[in-house]
Image 1 (cartoon, rainbow, N blue to C red):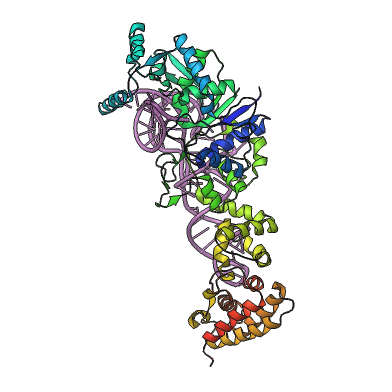
Image 2 (cartoon, helix red, strand yellow):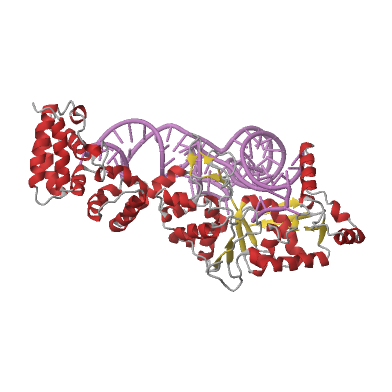
Length: 496
RNA sequence: GCCCUCAUCGUCUAGGGGACCAGGACGUAGCCCUUUCAAGGCUAAGACCGGGGUUCGAAUCCCCGUGAGGGCACCA
C-alpha cells in the first residue's frame, strides 16, 4: 500500500505548535515510507476563515522544512486542495446519502438547537441532537421544503451495536453506537462540515493513514460509519497524544494565551518560535522527542536520521506538556554544532531585525567564543550590546572597576598599561592580547592572578559585567574604539 | 449527566513478565575547570497513582478505584 498522509489545518490563524507536531509526524511517516505528504486546507467554516492564514501556515511549514508533495500552491493529481473549492463534490455525496437513506434533512434552527442543548446541559442530560427531524414523514419534509424553510443534512447514525476504531497507537477502541450523534453533514449554507468533508476528501485523495490529534477520537466512530454507508474502505487511524498546556491544565490552544506553572506566557505559534531565535532543525528535534523517542538514549539528532526509525506503533499515547526548558538546551546544542560562518550570518540577520547593524568582521571575531553562550539566536543582542552602545561603557563607576584584589590604584596602573599595550599590539588578535594583557593583570592584582584585572578590563572596554571573552571583545571593537573606552574609564578613576 | 482516552523522577522519556534495589535527558544542587557569562567534566537528590487479582515471578497482563485530559456545535 502506498502511504499517503495529509496535514489538514483550517485557516483560522497561524500554525500552532501542536499542529506543527502533527504535521511533523505525518511528514516523517510519509518520508520514511516512500509515501506522499499532502497539505489540504479545511476552510469549510466561512466565519472562522482568516485572510492570510493559509500563507502563514505554509510559511511556517516551509520554515520547518516540511515540504508537501501535493497542496494548494503546488497542485497535484487530486486537487483542488482547498475544500471551499470542492463544494459540489460534498453536495453530491450528501445527496447520495439522502437518496440511499443514510441521511435526512433537518429543519431545526440553530437557535432551537442551542436552547435545547443548554437545557440538556442544565439537566445534566444527553447534549447531542434529539433526532426529532429524523422522524419527519416524507409529506412533512416536502411541506417544509415547499415553504422554503432552510435545512441541514444530518447523518442517520446507527443507534444500536458497537463501532470499533482500530487505532495503531491504542489498539481497538470500542464505542457504543448509542453515542454516535446524527451529526450535521451539510450546513444550511451548502458547505459540508468537517465530518463529511474529511471522509469524502480522504477517500478521493486516496489517503492511507490518518494521523491526527487525540481530540478526534470521539468523532472517529461517526467517520467510520460514514465510510461504511458509502461502502468505502477506511484509512488506518493513529490518534496522536494531545499537547497539553505547560501548566498541565487543558490542551494547548491557539485561541488563548498559554502559561506555564509559574504563570509565565509561553510560545505557541511556530512563527513565534522562529522570531524568538530558535532554529528549525532544533525545533523539529524537540518536537520529535515529545510523544516519540529516538532510542539508544539519544536526544540530539537531525530529523533525517529519525525518519527511518519512526514507526507509528512506537508513539507514546499519553498526553504531554511541551518541555520548553529542553528546547533552549537543544537549540543551544544545535548552535554549538553550526558552522561559524553560517551562524554569523544568522546572528547578523537576527541583530538586524532587532535594529542593530554589526560588521561581519566584528561578528566573526567573537563568533567562535559566542557560539557556546547562545541558547538561541536572539541571545546575541545581550552579549554584543557594547558593539553599538558607546554610552554604556562611558565612565564606569570607580567602585565597579576596583575590588579587594584590585585596588583602585592598581586598576589605574593596569588599565594604563593595557592602553599602552593595545595601542601597539601587533597584530591585534586574541593570542597577542591574551599574552600581553594576562601578564599585565598578573603583575597588578594582589593575588597575582589576572582574573580580577581582566574583569575590570572587560567592564572598562565593554561596559558590561557579562560579555564575550575580553580579548575577542577588544578585537571585535577595533583598536580605536577600545582605546577610547579605556580612556573614558581611566578618566573616571582618581589620578592619584 | 453520558461516552472515550491516558497514567514511570518536577518535566520529556526508556522499559512491552525475570537482564530494574527502574536507564537517559532537561531542570535543580554541589564540586572541578575558568577573564565574566556560558560550555564542558564529575557527583547528588528525584518516579513505577492506589487496591485487588493472574503468575514461581509484575513497572510490564486483567479488574476496580482514583486522578488527569478529550468529546457530546450548522468549529475544525
